[in-house]
Each structure stands twice: as structure tokens, then as C-alpha cells.
Image 1 (tube, rainbow over the protein chains, first blue to last red):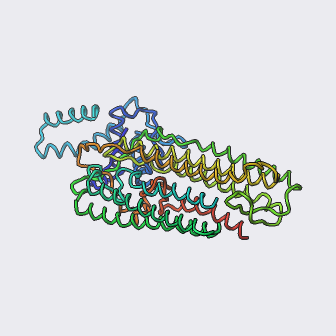
Image 2: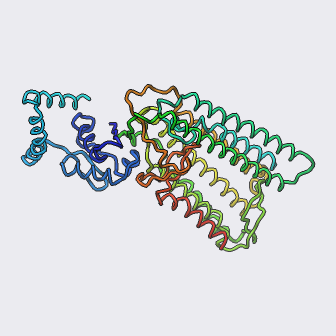
Image 3: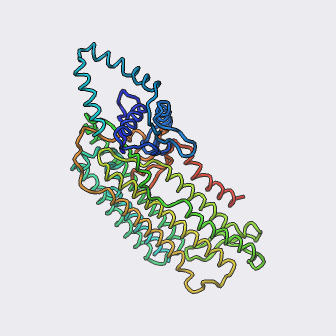
Length: 125
Length: 362
């Protein structure tokens, strides 16, 4: 799977990495049990600081998306059921964006349409 | 003999030096990053051609002058070696000056043509690239190391029959020409140096393996071929050189113990070693140089790879403290150069040299 970052973007590099890895899993390019490259190799291949990759991996770990196993590195977790706390977190994260869209005049129908088109975009890209 | 050795080295080294602009990474022209979209620019082609023709002409003139000088009356070997070495350095200095000149010209052209304007800088990698890496395994280095340990053990067992004078230096014909007094340490000094060198090459191999595989977002295929090719062939080439050095040193050590060994073709051995290393260098440079050549591809978006010129001081030295790579691909030449901002690289290259120098002079 290709990872491409924009160096002059306002989005920090570690967030770009996190987002792309998550999209890769959502799309199916990366599967649970797959190992991500070591921090050193990933940073060297991309030519970025090791802290940047480390920060992204820790963010992914906090979200429960990967597990950092000593010696084998970062491994994509297995998820079978969604627990309440995860659901609450996603709801809390989405809430301000939905409110913002409503304020700016995007109605419920358009918003639902947007969500479903984003889902198919992520799945097929 | 000296004359033929010098001419052989000269032809190989200068031949490669002349071809460098055509062997380097496709998007680096005279040490300047050029976006994929513009690598076939007519001015850039002209710069390369001018460098090639100037270097070729200068090298031929210098070589003819040297030959005329060397063959005229009877020059002795020492004079020929000194003049020949100076000639090598002279031509390399000229090549460096031409490089600096065309580096400045290319940089100016890039600025004037505003190639990077309106192009978004990106960095790219493939999460599966590491599984495609074909560098040799580090374990292969144990083979020559075991040979060296064997030679050391054999020397210790044969200590009594060693000559009282231990050779420390060998001339171009492979005959020892400098000696030191026999002690248990001087007896195994040569294979010990060999072992230090083998450890250094192993460290370089491991450091190269850990260094980044840099892909280009604008031509993923070409950059992948180039980087994987460079890694594979340089690991083979280094290993072959280590094997050859091991054979040469073991040969020196064994002929010291048994002076009548390999009596027939003695003088050929160092020369064969030299020719093999030079042929290896050429094959390596040409093989890697060809991996990423081909027509420029159509770049769909307005993107370009990160402009790394900012990390290359004078277009020659790489300083990037964010990059954990110890070695990076050279900008002018085929091979690797140190990331000067990473102290580990200095240790790998300098420590073995310091140890060898300390042992030799203490």
C-alpha cells in the first residue's frame, strides 16, 4: 500500500500518516494481523523524523487500531465487536463536524448522502 | 608493469567518471533535483553532453601526454607511479570542477525556468517495499570471517617456522618490500587487519540495509527499480570485494609462512585482483545506472518529489538530521554517501580506520 504525504500541508505529517493507515485498513489494503514497518524503516523510507512515525503509531494504538508488540512491532488489531466507549468516542468526534455542517446549511439529506458517498469512496479508492 | 597497472586503473576510473551524468538517478542532474516533468529538457541534455565531451577530450590529451612522457627515455618505476597518481588526481579534480560548473548552471536554469512553481511537494513510500528488498543476508559475511580466523589459527600453529622478518608491505608485483621483527602480534597483524575490515564491511552492509528506500511519487516504477537495484547490486559487489580482499590477504599470509607456495604465477595475483575489482566496479555502475532510464512518464497531478537540494551542501554532502538513514544514494556517481547529520555513520567508517592506523604506528 502506498503512503503519500504532503510536506507543506497544514495537517501535521503524523496525522497524515495516521489517516492514511486507517483508510488503508478500511479499504482492505491492510488486514488485521498485518505488521506495519518498523519505526526506523518507515521513517527512513519516507525521509521523516522517527518521532513523527512514533507519534502516529501511538495515536493508532490509543485508538485501538494497532497493537505495539515488543519485538514484532506494530500489528493491526483484530476487531469483532464495537464496545460502548469506542462508539461514544466516534460520536463525540463526529458531533462538532455535523453541527458545523448544519450551521452552514447542509441539510440532513445532503449530509447522509455525503456520508454514504465518502464510505464508497474510501472502500473503492 | 607499473605503466600497465596505471593505465588500466586510469581507463576504468576515467571511463566511469566520464559517464557519470548518464548513470546517476534520473531526477538528479549535476546534483540538482529536477522534477520528472522536465528531465528531458534540451538545455539539460546539452549540459550532460558538454560535460561528457570535455571530460573525454581532456582525459585523452592527458593520457597521451603521460604516455609520451613515460615512454620517452628510461623513466624508472617510481617516477611513473608518482606521475600516474598525480594524473589520476588531476583528472578527478577537473571532473569535480566541471561538476561544480554545471551544478551552478543547472541550479540557475531551474530557478529561471521556475520548474517547481505550482507543483505540490510530496513524499511517498510503499508499506510493502521492505519485503521486495533483495540485499544479501548479513550472515554471508561469516564465511570470509571464518576463513580469516582459520588463517590466524594456522599462523599460531606454524609460529615456529615463520621467518624472523614479518612482511608489512607488498609492492605492485606482489613481493613484500617492507618488514618488521617477528613477535606473536606482528605474525598475525595482517589477518587481524583483514578481520577489522570485514567487520567494517559487515557494519556498512547492515547500515545500508537499515537506510531508507526512497521512492519517487512521480515515477514509482523507475525509482523502485533504481533503489532496489542499487541495494541488491551494491550488497553483492561489496561482498565480492570482501571475498577478493580475503583471498589476497590470505595468500600474502600463506606465502609468508610457506615461501615456495604458488611459485609460478606470483606476479599475476595482485594484478588479477585489481582487474577483477575494476571490472566489478564497472559492471556494478552500469547495471545500477541502467535501472531507471527510460522515457519520462506523464505525471497526472501537479506534484513533485520533495526538493532535497536543501539537504545537499554544495551538491555533494548530505546533512539531514530528520532522516534516520545512515547512507543515502550519491548525487554524482553510483553508490552511497554518508548522511553527515547521523553520527553512527562516522563511527562505522572512522573507527576501523583509526584502529588500523593506531596498530600500525604504535
